[in-house]
Amino acid sequence: MIPGVGGVPRARLLALLLLALVEVIARALGDPAPYIAGSSSTGSTGSRRVDAVGGALSTTSNDVTSEPVRHQRSAGTAPPPYSFHFAHAVYNVSIPENSIIKTYAVQPPNEPRMGLHVTPDLEVRYKIVAGDKDRFFKAEERAVGDFVFLAIRLRTNNIVLNREKGDSYRLEVKATGTRREGKSRTTLEADTFIDVRVLDANDLSPLFYPTEYSVAITEDTPLHKSILHVVAEDADLGLNGEIYYSILDETEQFAVHPTTGVITLTRPLRFAERALHELTVVANDRGIGSTSRNQASKARVKIKVLQVS
Ligand SMILES: *[C@@H]1O[C@H](CO)[C@@H](O)[C@H](O)[C@H]1NC(C)=O
Ligand SMILES: [Ca+2]
Ligand SMILES: [Ca+2]
Image (cartoon, rainbow, N blue to C red; front, side, top):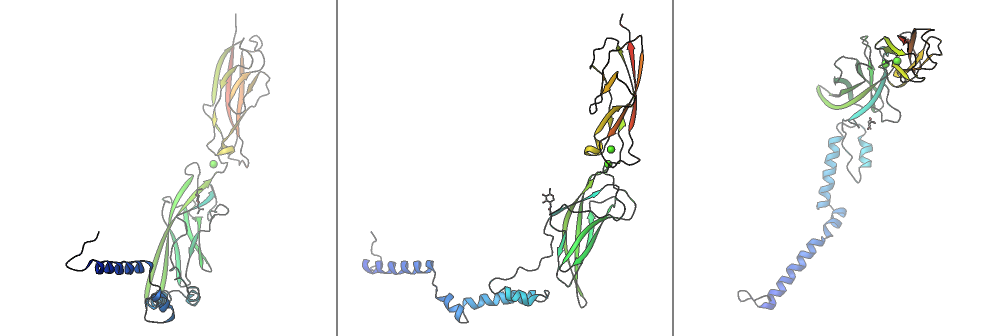
């Protein structure tokens, strides 16, 4: 129950409350009248909105030459302001090790092109600012239409990329855009990173360590028993560093496992016939495109036979 206040009759108070409620509901629903008026006449909230869009356009029109096109497109929404930035924070490229000077790094297929969209009055320079302390790389710019491509190439200082010493580099590239208007000069800056992967070349030969082995076994050693294990290594990647062992000498007495380097007995030993066997084990890698620097490596193996009494 609502009591009467200060002598105001209860019925009148109820009527006042009802009026207030109607007003609140009307406001909450929103009165459409101002918008209708705004679109057909000036001097309303609607025209102020149009003024604001016009103001934004006139500021962009100072530095964007394609402004008339933008005007037409912007009938409904304001165009996004021009922004000097790279579309991606990190790009990927690769380059083979031992590449000759001025070789360009290449992007993987289907990755977005590296570079910046520009306006015609902008002059863009790219510079590597971090991640290349040995100064292997150089950033280059090439303008094609409204896009300035960013390319990474080897410098001309004859330093050779060696994947076995460093297989990846993260370069930080800074783009500087300069705009000249009379005597004034504005500069814009943008940054991105480039992950450079150095691709392997088969430029190393397998190396045995140790290079000489000797073992003594009894005459009654069973067939296929492991006698000795030789080890060679090749720091190249994948097949370029995978070792293939073989025995250089023609022998039916011993065999070497092609991938493990384990030497086994394949014919019974006879001390009376031969008390010392000497083998040369060869290690090749499985890579192709071996150069003259990439040669098989050899190990000497001496197997002494002990007589069983
Ligand atoms: C670069 O490579 C990474 C990892 O493969 C990938 O996630 C990223 O999208 C690549 N960058 C671009 C710009 O394609
Ligand atoms: Ca190799
Ligand atoms: Ca290599």
